[in-house]
Length: 242
Image 1 (tube, rainbow, N blue to C red):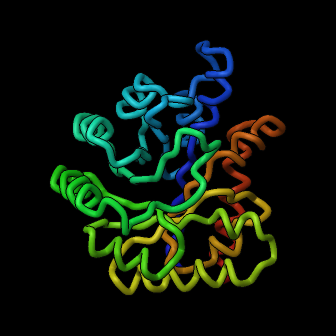
Image 2: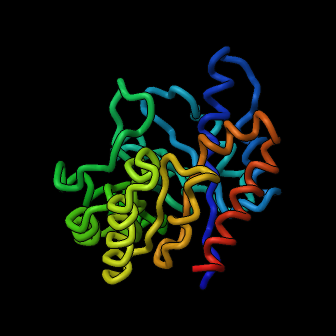
Image 3: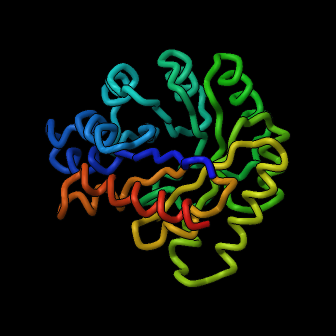
């Protein structure tokens, strides 16, 4: 089975920095360490409220990341303009609510359809790989295909919060198969850890995992390089045994 890509989300390195509005820890330095540890790409979410990642971070990541950069953003004119200027490898369109602590669910791809379709078209025309962060539901998969996305990222939050619940894993498996059948690249992420990632990593249609908070949390105890390598080992073992 093809090796699964691991993209590390470095948002929460910036969260620690922004607690004091200082210069450290530097999320770009963290990104380079993640690459050294074996990450296949770096993910960063430039939020409209700039609560963690800042514009200067995205500017630096776009030039200093040596693998590929996946920028998560809302589908707004401001964010699309930034993407068009920096031309990251991938843009993942995500929902945003100002009062949420973290992204709480998948993008409603039945709402504001024209904006989503036009935003995806602009990104596709610029040669930027496009992805939509959605719930693992068949209708969301099919709408994503109709809107013109190249990929979908399945929200794994419900799976992560319901340990041992076969229904949530079955939903991810079913959505992954449906996405692949429609020639969408299938990614997944949110709430994944060393303890729960193996069943998701074993889903053959899932090409890429985006994991961040658990890596930054684990890094407090074992360091960032080892935290990334731990995840990589568990993913590879799950893939090999599936």
